Length: 243
Ligand SMILES: [Ca+2]
Ligand SMILES: [Ca+2]
Image (cartoon, rainbow, N blue to C red; front, side, top):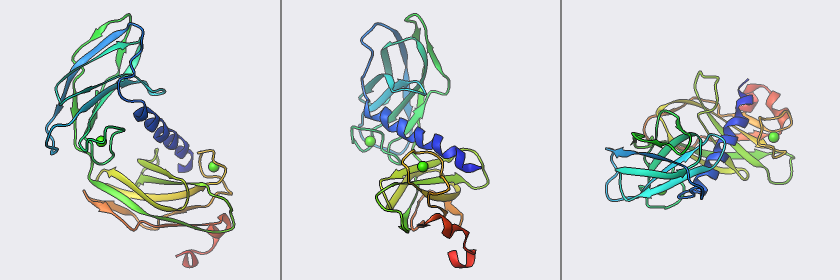
């Protein structure tokens, strides 16, 4: 029953990208509350890099953001009433845009921060940690009768778990994929063609396939995790043929 979780993961990936694209500094023009704290970092990245801090709800874009020149004290102003996740990342590669997966140290305050009546919340301290160094990459191929170009979704689960996928990526068609920032662990990888473009769980008429072995990630990139998609009826051929 894993497939039903895919839609949520894909939506989450999309929401995260939307979030990063509007960073930083889109504070509400109306007066509001204040969130203060400090960013700490003791990882392996050296040099001077901006640190972006933001407050966001689970459903929407950030309501406040700021950039500070280095880890240290920060303040988010004009935060409207609401419950917020406060997060931060260090722009280790100075890319200036969304956090670079697998490169930028990230962190979030572990507790929801509530703003009511323009209050000031202090002590919202965040520790940035280095990203996982693992990665999973490969090729998704397709041979079949479906015409046109459709999104290919690659999904990664921790082995033996039935919850939401740990990682997912969406490509605009068959070809290479690369999922970075993968924590050490044992994973199962699958891919499918989102034929109708609804970003939902795989449907019976959508090519779907598992990578046939467990993928073990240990602090380094794993390549060659190739998934071959065929038209759905091919899935029911004997395994000896499939492999
Ligand atoms: Ca970056
Ligand atoms: Ca679909």
